[in-house]
Length: 394
Image 1 (cartoon, rainbow, N blue to C red):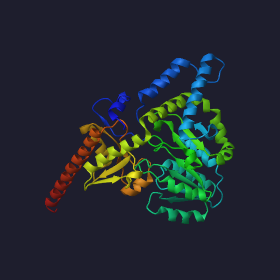
Image 2: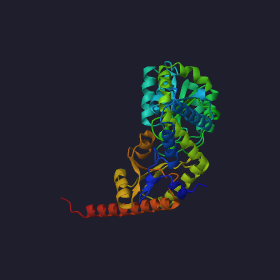
Image 3: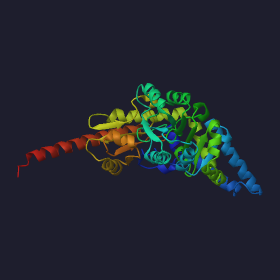
């Protein structure tokens, strides 16, 4: 079982009175990862590629790190390339697909706006069509089978929603798509740090994530492609450009491998279960009329990311109250999520994302303070309404 008190020792940046509940996109880098980066610099003082002894050692450490990443993802070296960003990874993937006139590009409804905009641009340029699909609804399988009869070429799936933390059941989705030869693209940005993913066994054609989402340093996006798609992607101009600069990412690669080993030592299943326990603690205490939660209805498809709205209290004001009065750090916004905006009716939300160093006591306090704010705001709303009703007509 994961011990958050022990984990906290690895994150000196979170010391103090504050409770950090803003860990969805990225968070602190644990000491074991920082130590590995420092040791790399101190030991080799060079970069892989030249004929010097330090450079040879740098190459050994670099190749060792790559091997760690390949083994963790269950893939071969020829199926991975290291790009500069998720945007670059997705761009190269799109270049390799070969969409034709009137081909349909299926996009999961939980996809983030930046990815959707890039796909829209590509589909429009190739005179195709986009259709959105909610893979998380009950009984979606039959609806999906009906849609893919229309001429679907590719499907973009956001594995875990960055606003609601809901996991898409890939074990049900991918077989249906692959049975019809549909190209599958998986964004694992919010799943890679809390779930062990064997990309080859998952049977996806493409997948990507950024290093900063895995308790590592920013700067690298890991792009996977299956054997069936290798020739298509390697012919693109974007792939050739990435390969030329791949060794420039030696520090990022060493750091990512160290982060993988760190999470592996904690246990990915324990990480996810711990997050779920924290979320359940918060929502069970704060969950009454006046507050809405946006998360998975099923525990099996829930992670440690979820969003809330509270009565008529603006979410940015809720964020300020939590931080200034109770030292609880959260995030407000729409998180580039059209799905969240649809669910909230266009309102921004407050996103909470407890993680490996948060304790049950902290989760309990967050739930209690949310409940306290909810009741206080409700009383103010009632008082304001009564005052307005007492005002004499002009």
